[in-house]
Structures are given as C-alpha cells and as structure tokens.
View 1 (cartoon, one colour):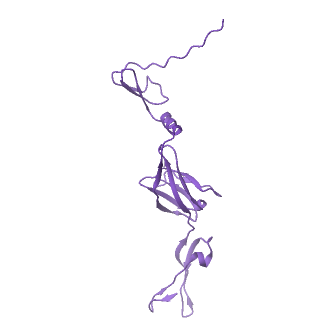
View 2 (cartoon, one colour; view 1 turned 180 degrees about the vertical axis):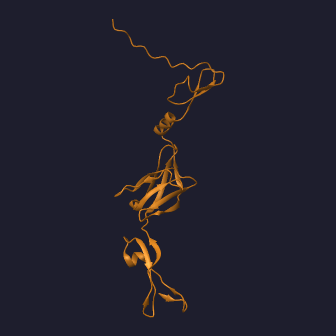
View 3 (spheres, helix red, strand yellow; view 1 turned 90 degrees about the vertical axis):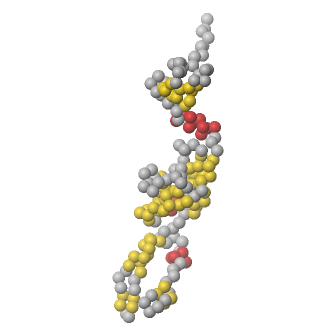
Length: 188
C-alpha cells in the first residue's frame, strides 16, 4: 500500500498470488484509522477466466459453431445475442476442450461466467468459416426450399417435404408430377 496523499492510499492486489488460482467471489475492504474500524464495503467480484482459443463455424447456418479453449467449465452459458434468447448452457463438471455455440452476430459471442452469472461479458472472436461438406449441403438442402426445374427450364419453388400441389408457386409451369417408380419383374 502506498499513500498518495494524507487523504488517499493506493493498494495493489495480485489475487492469484494472494489467494491462489482457484479463488473467486466478492472482494470487500474496510478502513482502519486511529484505532477505529469501518464497515466492510464491496470492492469487486473476483472471477476465474477460461482461455478462449478459437471458434470455427460451418458454412451452414443451421449447424453450431465450435468454440475451443481451456477451462471452459468456468463458463456458465454462451449466446449470440445480448438478451440470451437462445443460450447454450455449459453442463456442470464439463471437462472438454470444445463447446457447440451459436453462430456469431457481428463477431461477438456473449458469455456468462460461472463465478458471476449475473454479468454478461462480450467477447470478440474471429470465426474461421469452414467450407461446406457434402453432408452439410445435403442436410441444408433437406431443410431449405428447393428449386425445381422442368425440361423447358421453367421454374417452380417447392418447400422441402411439403405437398407440391399445396405449396407451389409457378410461372407458366405445367403441374409437377412425381418421378415414375421403377417396376419390379413379376414372377412366372
């Protein structure tokens, strides 16, 4: 502690050195002057920090990104928005080095730490965009509307898995017919 003036003292604290790397929780202080001791006052909340290494996101928005790092068990939850409308909860006792997280919005991932989940911490990470794999493309095509063309290059949009006659917007396109089914040879 160093006296700046007769009114101000400056104290420096290295929490890891003073308490060890596992210390967390509220820090308080009180003043003692001329034999009188004041009340405890809140100073700050000491939290342990995970080390966030990188985030990799597939090209398909329906699939989660992968956040890698160490001490991820110190994270309570993550979200792609400040309101935590769709948070990803980190399970108690999680010892892994990667977590599935939502796609980043404007490069920001919002984190609540286990030691103080009332505070929302924005983190800025540069997401590595992964190329779409054939399996990702197939999964995405099954979930997205498909573009169907006929032999005359006229187009119709059909929702995947829906009844074509009920959900079809056409532009001078004849009615779509299901593909012919292969016939089985009949036994003699």
